Length: 336
Image (cartoon, rainbow, N blue to C red; front, side, top):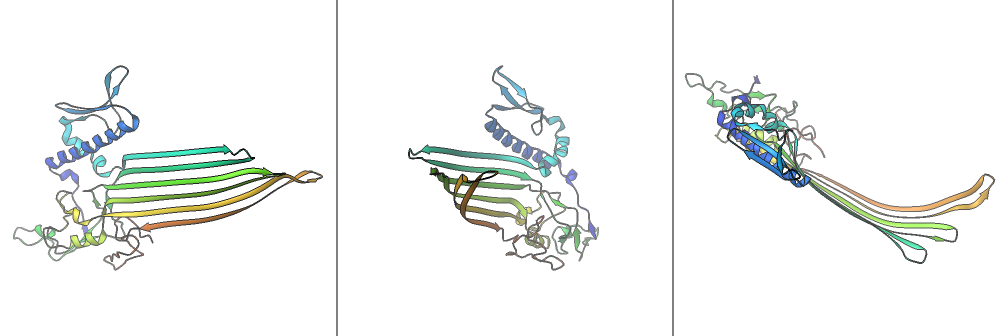
């Protein structure tokens, strides 16, 4: 049995306005961040029938309305159509909500006065960004079912009070859990230290250096869907069950949401030394050069995946498939 679920065009007027308010809040936060990044004064003008984002022309001391997405003018007179036309912005579009980067780099060369030169490099980089991504969508290979005891399924009754789908399971297909956008929060940090010396001895030039660098990345995605929690919620016989028939309003989606992380780390420690001579010996075709060197390096890589992705939390689907065929995170393949 195939299940066709209502879309957002069936949402009440109150819900449409609420969606518009949430969208406006996101745009105000984005405008604030853009103003800081571009070192500009941004303004928001609200009158009886419209909302306008503007930037200040400091030279002429006047406000210039922005006409580019996502800061185009919104008119209250069309609030119903706005709420519908901007559903993709509110519920589907990927958008970088926040970005912050810092980089410090220093290169120092110093002549020690005895034919030896010291060179040093110091580097530090950090970044933090928040990305708003489209809501989760289950893979076609992991289709969920509304259980026969689902509370909201059994609210659909015939005139005599008999449950319309009594004892039936409903397959969910082509359904996006659009109540919550996925929020990707990534923090990265890298540092690098290099110290070396170079000089000459008789006919030979030499150089040696030590370098150590380390990079970390913490990637956390909020509002992901746990397959095991969703399965449990779809088969719940109480009002706390997940309600896929509510068009996203009071659906109890919160009980199936989880944070999913990926934590990575890479580290390099290296020492190298080399000597070179441009004219070791003379050959008929010209001088013969020679370079000899050695290198020692130690590398370390860590890739820590969330327990719901690496099989620690194992999800069994309706065909009894589990890790490594499927993961406990909707819309994500299992990774080890």
